[in-house]
Image (cartoon, rainbow, N blue to C red):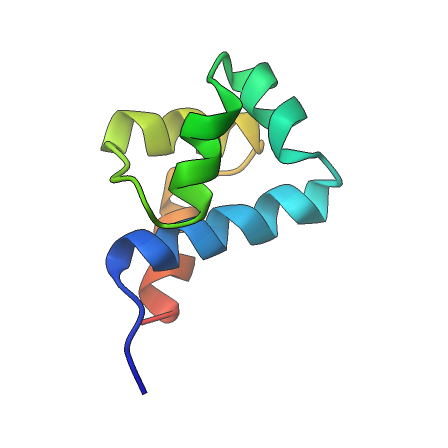
Length: 76
């Protein structure tokens, strides 16, 4: 079995959080002031995510950055 990359684990974690909020990818990206394709690439694990971007996303999800990071770590 191929182990998911860090980018894929980040994307999957963010996707789960966003879906739990019941917000579409497009609406969430809009809320963050980010283009949908840029945010979509992050969720799909195709784009590296800077820490500042991850913090911005966490705040948009009304959660703490450490909680997101913990879930990413646990998915390893």
